[in-house]
Amino acid sequence: AAPSIQGCSLRLAPMFSCRPSATMLLFSAIPLVFQAASVQAAGKTAFASPLLSLGSRRVGGFAPTSRAWRTPLSRAGNVRMVATDADAGKKEKKEEGVQLNPDFTFNMEDIVSVCKRRGFVFQSSEIYNGFNGFYDYGPLGVELKNNIKKIWWRDMVHRREDMIGLDSSIIAAPAIWKASGHVDGFSDPMVDCKVSKLRYRADQLFYGKVELEDGEEIGYVSVLESGTMQEEAEKMADKMKRKAKKQGTLKPLQLFEVAEAPEDVLPKIPSPATGEPGSLTPPRAFNLMFQTQVGAMSDASSSAYLRPETAQGIFVNFKNVQQTARAKVPFGIAQIGKAFRNEITPRNFIFRSREFEQMEIEYFIPPGDDEWPEFHKTWIDTCYNWLLSIGVKEDLIDFDVHEKDKLAHYARACTDVAFKFPFGRSELLGVAARGNFDLSAHAEASGKKMEYNCEDTKTKYVPHVIEPSIGVDRLFLALVCSAYDEDIVSGEKRSVLRFHPSIAPIKVAVLPLMKNKEPLVDKARDIFHKLQNRYNVAWDAGGAIGRRYRRMDEAGTPFCVTVDFDTLDDDTVTVRERDSTEQKRMKIDDLYAYLGKEIDGF
Image (cartoon, rainbow, N blue to C red):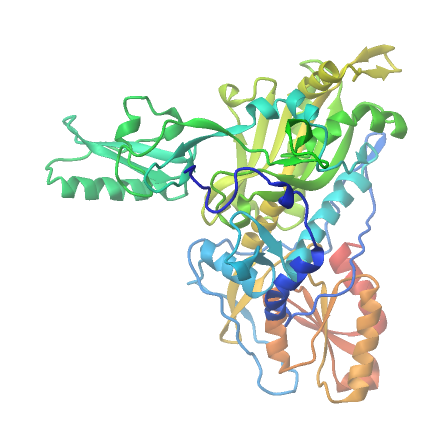
């Protein structure tokens, strides 16, 4: 029997080519949504801010809010999430100081736990024991994800005069993927374990030779790629030495990809599943595209693919967009959309899944080796600064510059922004200089010209491309890891998500001090409904005020507005800020301008 990939079919059968019923999926998620619904998420978010000027064009500037909104502490490791009640009584009390919790660390299991418990992310099809590589976004998760996309579109498209938007189809003519090289070359190296029937990506499976300093070979070890794989492999080597009852010192263990293992070494490499050598097959290419059928027939003529990336939809629409928008090079086309890859081993939560969402730009520039380097550098800086502006921790990101021998054959350069996730350091965002390969390939395959007529120079040419690309799901995970924190307030531990206000799922919570006093509730409801016109606002009237503050802290809500009996006398409310727990008393008429400045920056 053919080896399975952890329960996922290698081929997308017609019955899975589209969702049969959104209602059925909604019903399957109801138990999880009910569990997470202690924080109510409702309303819509509006975004607007002034443009910044650069040269003769107004382009994207990331206008900061009036607060720095940088998480003050950098953490790593292992911790448990703790939610506490600050007050047992009904009277509002000020919290006494915020202190660092010196013992706070966290790992990936903690991130997965808080994402489910607070309604950010659920395992897809969980009541049917899950479906590996697919995830559903809950009440808070869908708000956070939508905010990420809205702000990216605002900053990369609406705030720039050199950008245009597009939304291309998920399924397109198969000839597109043939011309782009995906049919023949969009694959990962794969090995099978003949005993366990499990499959592994050969470039994410590493092996090392265990030998003594005198050259005596003891054996080989294998580990899956992770941030701790060197330590794991060294422990395995020590255990192998003890088991073999060998004396002497081991040579430093070097790890290599199984994809590059020599033929005579491969039989000696143990399978991660069994620990026994000789069961891994030679690496072979595995195409990552999901295949489906279009129309009533089920033969080769009806075969099509779910797109593995959004970029090709931009390239094949280059002439349509450029001509209808009357765009002049340099200009860019932006797109946000779903993509699908039949990953051999989806892992690390939503970091590597089979269904994901991309935010991509194809920025078209004049040809020439003297043109692309400056554009490439500008886009790297733009993307890096944008990540910081929405709350990605600066001390958790750095750059990876691809070496020439690691580039695609058509690429001039590629630089990644890498993030230090709990499972290890990995790519978050990439900026590639792709040359004119894609437009030229589609021109040749389709017979349609992909030239740009430059009125200034009276010449025609095929533009080159700079491609900034980021996964929404990976950025979602990076933002949660950046925001996740624990401190001590009034002597008690507090679990908090320090989201930047612009991307926080809930912007403001309105809290009447008592839920059974009609004048308080009416006043609070009036404020709540007015804020809903601009933001996603939560209403919470149950429990002690300290308990409600803690619920909002763990949901990442930056501001709480408390309506108490003084409000009825002087029309003032208490505004409590999440990170510092500072409380301010202000007039209701001043509240809306204050929140606008703190959240939107103006």
